[in-house]
Image (cartoon, rainbow, N blue to C red; front, side, top):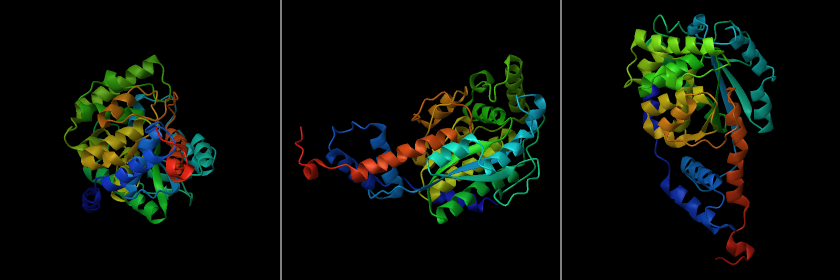
Length: 350
């Protein structure tokens, strides 16, 4: 038990400083004022550090959409019924969701994973890593056992390994799970000692009464389960979600395989926070895509010391914000590879 997790944690290494310095020097020789391309230059340096070389290339990309159901839906915390989780997964598989459109525009694959959907879906395109048929209601007791939490994290690690072996060079985190902003809020509050009022947002668009129910559910879940803020696996098991645990594993697995991972919105960022509490060195492999409208997202990003690339007022999830950032990664690589230097272009320097 935990052998795969421990092995992955030990495999995560700091970024390659030599590759990063070579990339900085190359960028400073290009026909522009030093640093004038801002975050694109920072991305190029980070990608070089992750890859361990300044010789970067545009690589294959995949958005991993992990899905799971949540027992806390019994508390009326979502504007949508629980069966929408499975229905939307079928929509992903059939190419009809926002993530399919945005990933397709970026030339990226969409990989759908059943981490704990309540409905039994039969589709050969769906990757099954189902740990259990949805979590228990966290208001009344733990979401899952510790063993199940570990299994979910390790499933994410294993999937990152498989995708890396298939030639995927960049991963992005996506999720689907009706009600999942509630356990995400509970996890963030538990990990960081925050109050429900600080972290709970409207999720799928609940009204004022629904917002009150969500805050009460989060407060009750923490009071009932007493998650240990110093033990991320305990937090997952007591107030978390199966897809959130899987995404935490995906982040760790990506870092262990020296792959950058673009994180999406609130739920994905809470998963990344769990990953970094388990292995702090994984933080260097994260690329924050956008700032969600969900209340707790800014706080979660702040805990990770990350500044998102985009501010578009989005709150959909699915990996949509992450997919929008793929062209920025390609742009950073192409600037490094295709721009002329002052010497090659015959341009005078300042």
